[in-house]
Length: 289
Image (cartoon, rainbow, N blue to C red):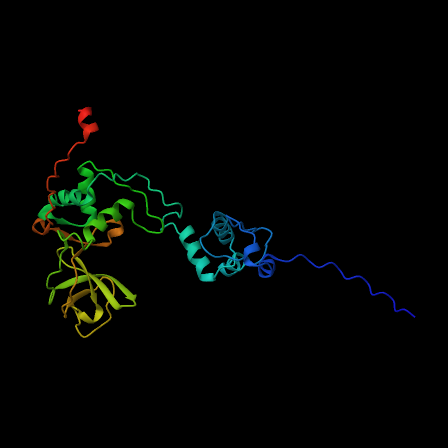
């Protein structure tokens, strides 16, 4: 007697993207130039590597604005939580420039020697010294048009980055940072107290307007030298000498900026090209005249 035939098996569900990628060899995997993400349907975990696509950026902004957690967004994009959180903060934080192709607002003129122009601008400043913002103001008075658009992912404009790179580049010795004078025994007012990886530090403003950063252990309260409760607005006295550069309150939000000094005696001498040797003309060139 024959046994009854077993019932047919139910159809197998279609494989997901990750399962298909595991089964297929590398040479047969479909290649896509642009990765698209289905955020509304919730397509599940997708392999996310490399640069972010426009669809991923739009998905992060839309879903985070709607209140979704970064962990859920990272799970659907196939990326780590820290990577998605960092990307979302750069996309949505108004303090940072919009992430994009990085195109400048004003096309940079390659024919301008900015080292010479910055040197000319610093010669117009009092005592031939000032901050990067002072140099930018002098360049604008000279007729230069600097790019006011923000560099992607930074809080500085492209023009400020251009001037700052010239002033701080170690190759150009004619632009030197002013060393801060001896402050031992001088008093000032605490502007801000910060806690960081380099220790407990305080920014102190002195009578000449200079703002310098000191370790709290190098300061003492003027009213009670034995006390160490230093906070913003307190009057302090410098008890230990520290090295560094001069900084003054300038620029946006009155942030301390480095003061640079132009020293023409350190300007490198440009090499003079020797006159080229005479070119002998061939027969065809002599006929042309």
